[in-house]
Length: 274
Image (cartoon, rainbow, N blue to C red; front, side):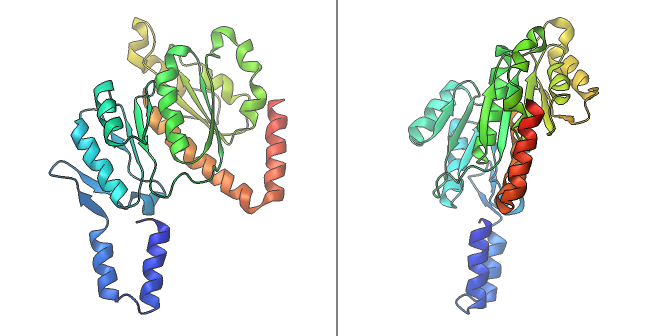
C-alpha cells in the first residue's frame, strides 16, 4: 500500500463506499505478508519511508528471493535485491525477464506495475579507483531505483588529483555526492572541501595488508576534517546510494515547488564547481 492507495481507501470510507471496520481490517492485515515460512515482506515500508523493502540477497536462495519479489509485485511494488551471485541472477532473469541485472554491482531490479517515475534530484557517484566500481555500482542502482538522476565519475583518486579537478562542474551541480574509496580513504575529504552539498563516504575493502579489509579507510573517513562528510559501513554501496537518494529527492522536490529558488540554487552550485 502506497500513499495513493491509502488516500483512496480513506476517501472510500468518507464516501460511504467502504465500511470503517472493513478498512481497519484491510489496514491491519496489509503491513506485511508471509512469503512462505522464511520471510515476512514489509509492505508498509513504502508508506512509512517512501520506498519499498530492499532484499539483502546474501545467504538467501534464488527461490526465496523470487517468492519475495512476487509478493512485492502482487501488491504493486517493485523489487530490488543486492549482493547476488551469477546463479541467483540467472534464476531471477528467467523468472522476471523484464528485470535489470547489474553484474558489477551484484544487484537485480524489477520495476513495479506503475513503471518508472519521473527523475527527482541529482546524485553523482565518485570512485577513487576502478577497483571500487562494484560498490559504486550498487550505490548507483539504489539511487536510480529511488528515481534520482544519477551519474558516475570513476577513477579520480588522490594519486592523480588533476583527474578530479577536471570534474568540478559536475560535482558542483549535484544535490548529494557518494564518494567510494579504498586504500587510505582520502578522497571524500578532498571532495568535501570542494563542494557545497552533502558527501556520503563509502569505504571499500580494497587495499594491502595494513588496510585491514577496509578498516583503515573507514577510520580515515570518520576522521575527515571536511564537515560535510558523513560515513557509512565498509562496502555498503546500498546504504550510500539510499541516503544520497533521500537527500537528493528532497532537494529536487523543493526545486520543483519553487522554480525561482531552484534556479538560484542550481546557479550557485555550478558556480561552486567552476
